[in-house]
Length: 88
Image (cartoon, rainbow, N blue to C red):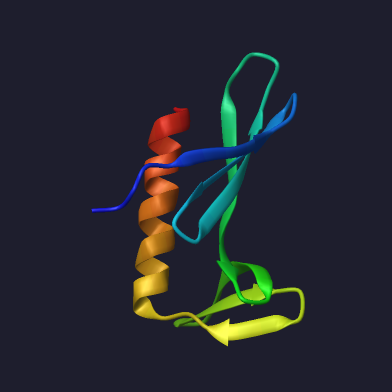
């Protein structure tokens, strides 16, 4: 079972959430509704986002592009789904 999603940082319109190595930025409107941006994963080289090239998944960030494991893809998928439910 995955741990709880934590609020890492916030400003007037944005909040950063994380769980394990996953992070995402959520934009909140003045009305309070949240819009989830892309989820990423912290790596040894910094934040990398999941990018699909055909059927292959990669973690891509500044100066990094590595194949994503099926476990990493599933971790990001679960995190994104759980965060969407939290901000809904």
